Image 1: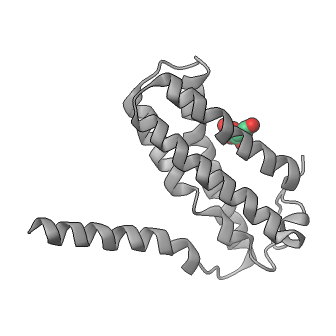
Image 2: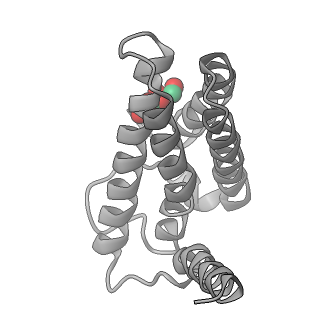
Image 3: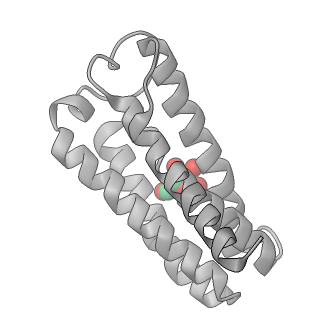
Length: 153
Ligand code: ASC
């Protein structure tokens, strides 16, 4: 395979990955609810592994940090299409009605998190713990801001 072929295949794969969430359709509301809960749970697991390093609860391992931050940055695309119309009912969940009635504001929170996740991955790529710490705070704040506004206790 030529380098150009490999580059084209990689670009096609990247486009597929990025366009997947936009194409996501759910057979029923319950599936959307499970999907967003599942994806947010997995994001939390990988984000938490970085948090443990940042907070000194786990030894800093640059490779582990980078792997987890890359996952968070990719997975950050997933939950939002599962908050579509009608998915406020269908199974137990903690999202407030405002997630549907204030869609523009809700989407701003999602976009903010996605942007912070990209910055976190860039920081992790440097292999420097101080850079990771500097990017982790704003990323965690973006999680919290959305949870405070749109997740009930
Ligand atoms: C996490 C996690 C969240 C955020 C939030 C930040 O590790 O699971 O939801 O950080 O607690 O305040």
